[in-house]
Structure formats: C-alpha cells, structure tokens
Image (cartoon, rainbow, N blue to C red):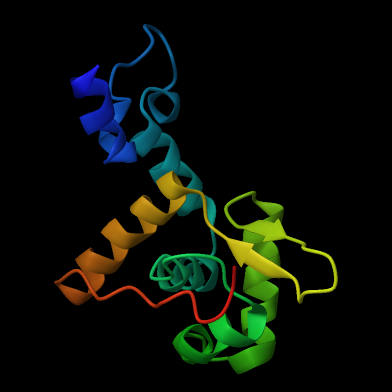
Length: 134
C-alpha cells in the first residue's frame, strides 16, 4: 500500500505498464499525454504549459496576465487557446454559483505541463498561488 501511495505522488510515472498490442500512445499515461500535447497547435501548447504553473483554480483574468504574453496575438489569442484546451478536455471549467467561472487542470495534466515548463526554463518555477480562487 505504501508503494501505491508513493506512486500517486508522481501521477505520470505511476501507470507505466503497457497493454500488449496497444498503440504506442495508449501504453502509458505519459505517452498519452505526450501524444495529446503534440496534437495541439504551438500556441495552445504554450498556454497549457503556462497554466500548469497554477497551484489551483484560476479565472480568465488571473491566468491572462502571465500567459497572454507568451502569445503574439495577446489577450484575445489567450481566450481562443483556453477554449481549445477546454474543448480538448485538458482544462476543466469550474462553475460555482454566482462566483466568476474558474478553470483548473487535473493533476496528471498539471504534472505533464510542469515537466514541459521545467524543460523550457531549465528549473522548476515557483507555482502561482491560488490568487483568490477556491
């Protein structure tokens, strides 16, 4: 049981056994994430990697500040890319009563994005705080 609990801390390396005869991108969770990521346009990849730095839920206004500058098209481009990521089920929409709509990443998606972020910047950046989102 301790091994399973320890494996859950790194969601991408936990499921590493492949099914015999399965296509390459279905053999491990990491392979599936890599395959999905490679299907995205570069701008969507950039936004997903940026969003992985958020430790919890975020609103459009909060995420736009650090992520839109990665796009040449600015704020409007950010909304387009966020919509693409929601449509691809890589970003989840969180609706809570009268609160503004917020978004979040499932832990395996966030872990994958952070790996990509570390590859790009050469170190593990400090995560953005929740910034008032619950």
